[in-house]
Image (cartoon, rainbow, N blue to C red):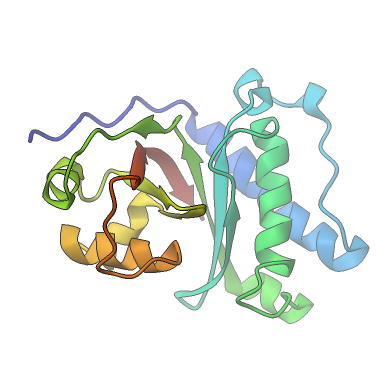
Length: 194
């Protein structure tokens, strides 16, 4: 299967910088006020006022320190980034809340998602063949369980079969799980960081 083209960038480098500054400001505001930074949308570019889904990932010395996001749009992009940055710093259940001493140690990465599209398949082999390593973010769902991997996860799991097995586990399924009710969707991301 030929690689699908990467979508054209939706945001400018200046908009990337604005979102990264908003994310960092929201974390700093959270340390002082215990809530996300309020965003004045009338001061934001039109692209940052559009409803878009995004994830905010924090790394400290190269190690994951928090990652929170939405798979579907729930708010204007600027608000989604501010809320997710705060949540990644203080509400990711895998980590203790970020401390003031860590603020200068973290790197912030933002992934803005394209709308998810269903993947048609009738077997695990067909699903594996449909995956585009390095580009596809995948949502997997079955029996009320759901999980996703952002495209960046391909860097750690470049093999399609390993990627799918780990995604099944993240969704709370067995790595060998298969059923006719299994569903999958793909999305792409526009990703940028500090």
